[in-house]
Length: 238
Image (tube, rainbow, N blue to C red; front, top):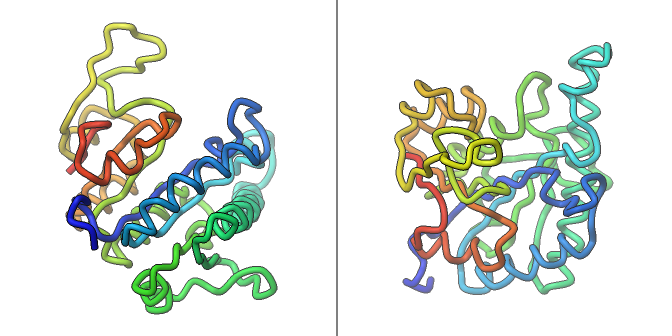
């Protein structure tokens, strides 16, 4: 393991929107390819990596239920969307020479393995990237909560929350030009100030199990590696 890295085993939380790029919908092959190239570098350096991917670029359960669809049904459709994203990521990873496994919380044996904690850990130890799809397999739980849950189960050193902004601010930097960015913030402050880093369930889970989180801007090339090396490219929540 190269000692230039501060963390040995990490979980990367990707939103579905991150894979859509500027088109805002679906999967942009160039975005996925660039991401795989960045990830290949850190995996080849010996970092153990699990990825939880959302499905918002294809379908959002909450939006579906707002349109009158049954919430559970809408959430299941959202979970299936995450499997599509996971397969696209796996394809890109393998074209960049990274061995990977898709593990789904909903059984789909033709395209993925079932999520089995010990098997996932074994894959990580062997240098394979584990892509965790279909959320927790339960409606009403977000992929943020999935990321927090899997991070605790897989005993990772930190959760990397990839976003389009360079950290956590005291108000929305898109709307308020005077918004202040935090270098460090506690989970308790995130909850008490109602900062939308992750949903409250995910935040509480990380807080209770002492899992730190780095919130960083995915759109800037090289940021994943920089964050893992401890450079101040985002906000550390702990």
